[in-house]
Length: 110
Image (cartoon, rainbow, N blue to C red; front, side, top):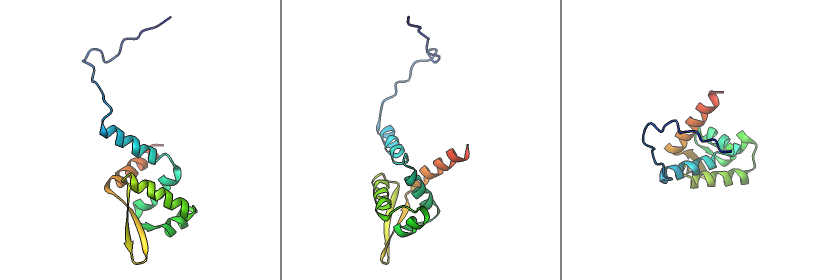
């Protein structure tokens, strides 16, 4: 037996949602931050730019794994790299800073 419930917003015309570029970009960002190690890396970079060896000290992750995560975060537009002497340092982009700020708000709501 089917029970049909009338949509609560049926008083107003229905808004048609389409999967546009903005939703696709949001989905890409959400996929990037589903891995706890990446959230940790983003949180470290939120405080200041760091090189891989500094991130390794803070997280205890291997350099290979950190480099892999940084590549993904960089490809996703959340992190950029720049060379300082013999070190490559990483910092958050403006979008990366917004993402970390949102994550921190979500964490602080608990």
